[in-house]
Length: 329
Image (cartoon, rainbow, N blue to C red; front, top):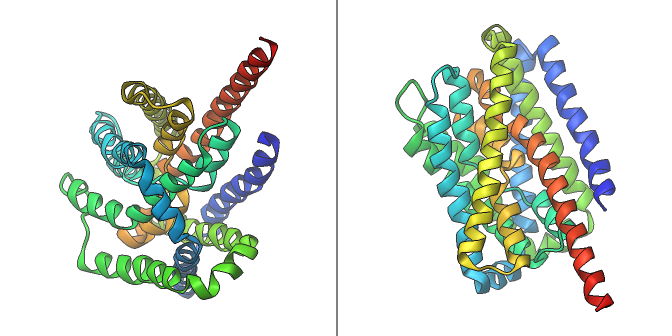
């Protein structure tokens, strides 16, 4: 199963890197940049519309039954993560724009697909993972912009303008609500055509990354960001993920969660969604800043996939060993 997961992820990671290279050497300029921006906006609207149609109301109600676990995931996602992000973003020697990207990374909701997949590999509570990840993404539409407005003002950082609020409502919230309200009529179609959601999901991300990095390259992105800055950023992402994985383990022990629920807390609580972060950054920040803002989440995304895949395999193997020991006795 782990091999199948990586076989799905690898082409997208390569496509992401290829898009960054394309934007570096052939950035969108002039009229083409305007058209590409409109197409990217349309992709974001369609993406959130389909995500709204995909979200099951039954999953929402069932998820409320295990509320201590879901609250713990949300506290880690929108509480502990931002606190760490504030600390890391104020470290000396970190480029201010990149520091803003690190902080923005910590304000994002959890992923859905990888959180559920890794929970399944680790033999955790898959149903609870579906609920926790869905709640996180649903609340993230409101919580992430609110946290950006609260925490990313001052020190040269951009808060939320009226135009940003309008963009959030029109491009993210309205399509999501419309998709969910239309679920009784289109939900079955979306469920049958999961490939369509994957294409829209990844295609919209690649479009926004291309337009964002293209605008940043035109503004001199790679003259500002050195290899040393990138190495420092990688170390900060590794440190951030390590601390969160340790803290979720400690919190699960403190709450005396079952092994299956502790796995949910660790995997859902430690993830940050590239799929949500890319379109939100495109709405919340000026075009010239988006490329730098997205660097941390793009790097953290790859690191979390590799680290959590190894951790999930370890948990799954340990569970198999326990089962064999139980059968032997």
